[in-house]
Amino acid sequence: MAKKEVGASKLSPKKMLVYLFLTLGSITSLFPFYYMLVMATRQNREINQVPPPFTPGSDLVSNFQKVLDNIDFFGAIWNTFFVASSVTIGTLFLCSLAGYTFSKLEFKGKTILFTMILVTMMVPPQLGLIPQYYIITTLGWLNDFRAIIIPGLINAFGIFWMRQYMKESVPYEIIESAKIDGCSNFRIYWNIVVPMCLPAFATLGIIVFMHVWNDFLWPLVVLRDPSVHTIQVALRALNDARLLDYGMIMSGTFWATVPLIVVFLLFNRLFIESLSEGAVKS
Amino acid sequence: MKKRRMSDQKRTALSAYLFISPFYILFAIFGLFPMIFSFYLSFFRWDGLTPMEYVGFSNFEFIFSDPAFFSSIKNTFLIGIMGTLPQIIVALFLAFALNSQLVRFRNSFRTLVFLPYITSIVAVAIIFGVIFNNQPFGFANYVLSFFDIGPIRWNAEYWPVKIAIASMVFWRWVGYNTIIFLAGMQSIPKDLYEAAKIDGATILQQIRHITIPMLRPVIMFVVFTATIGSLQLFTEPLIFLGRGLREEGITVVAYLWRDAFVYNSFGSASAAAIVLFFIIIVLTTINFLITSRIGKSKKVG
Image (cartoon, each protein chain N blue to C red):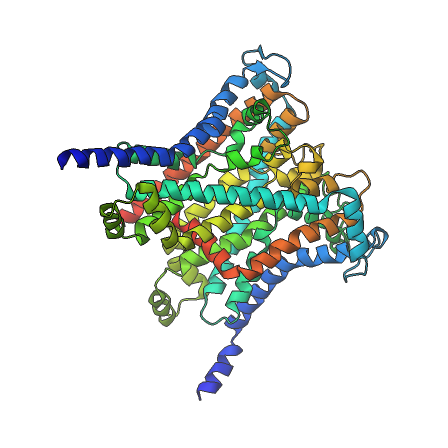
């Protein structure tokens, strides 16, 4: 009987509709990736035909070779990785320290200072773009990774996020007893609070890392020299070439996207949960 | 005893200020100062090299007499609406479908739908640039050829440019918003739906009378971030249109970037930034007013 019921509900038109809708959504999601793969494995003259090819070809390697001739692909990937890791580590440290301070320490002006941080979240970063560029040139940081890393360390959302987490999951008694044992405030943070908040670190770390990895406008402005290009800026340079070789361009885009997809599939659940949690909470 | 406690408090306060100071110092240098300086700069003519020259309001006069600037504002709004409105509606339906207890493979669907979000905007713009190629071999034109349409010059004509850019925005963000909505939906009590089903409510009725009212704060959040995000559109038009940034597709941020870093006209670019700033303030205020009004009516009702 029960079996029959399951079978019956499987065929219900409502359910079919839901599946159809989800399948359509998934195909729409996937198609550009597939099309990218098709283009990345084809020669330009095959792409320029009507009808265009819809199945992968055999030029994956030769197209990528052309990418390597045009841009320092691996250098750009390394630059991006270096910059994103530095910003992530720095941000995690500063945000967790500030989050700890705002959730567990008492001091004058706490509320006002914290409100100030929340207000800064409203300000779109592009508004100060030109003076920021001027500051970077004055400091001599043009074409220098410091131009990305140092300003990237300010993260109001990160402080907010860490404060929320610590407020909920670090009991006050533990901090109190550590204080009685004579721990300094920093030692309490480093030896007690940080180990207790590793999930919050992982979540914020993913968000920050991805954000820096995908950032484009600011690196475009301050990293002019090809030797310091991040992968996004390098991809743009590839796309801006005078003679458009779509096979080559898509090969570059493809190989720049694949690592992200692999990492995403590995940490899929953590990834999605962290982003939705961060959004719903803020 | 009392004395020690005082000094303890002082020490705590001192370390507290020390721990949070990096944020304020960095924000002062890289956030606040640049913003204020942008206002100052908008009254000067400056190419970044020679001394600044005070010119009063002429930067504003210049951008307001520049048709491209008006286009940039119009484009930003049009592309913003075209990209986000359908996106929010589709995301609501997708989230509702994913939230349904009947569906199997929910995690796989969720992952697939979310995949575009992790792709960089540069990559998205490049891929869509090929899909929306002007030539007959471009995917979009090829499909349209079956309906005897085209070939359309996607990056040169008024509406096609906007459709192409809006579709990039749509594609990259629809899954992200789906996940946000889904997270919100999962906090809605299941028995509400059960009761509605017993009363014979259709899916559309369930969405209208249960999901949307319960989801109001999340919807507001999504609308809010989508609005701000649309106002910052830059990468898609730059990659899709190239350095020239044709008037049909230029956005405000792209306009100010071109003024500053292609034409070396930092003063008028700053003026554009100031105008953008006021647009954002106005829209944020409207957003807040609507949100708080809805909050109020909810309390009354």
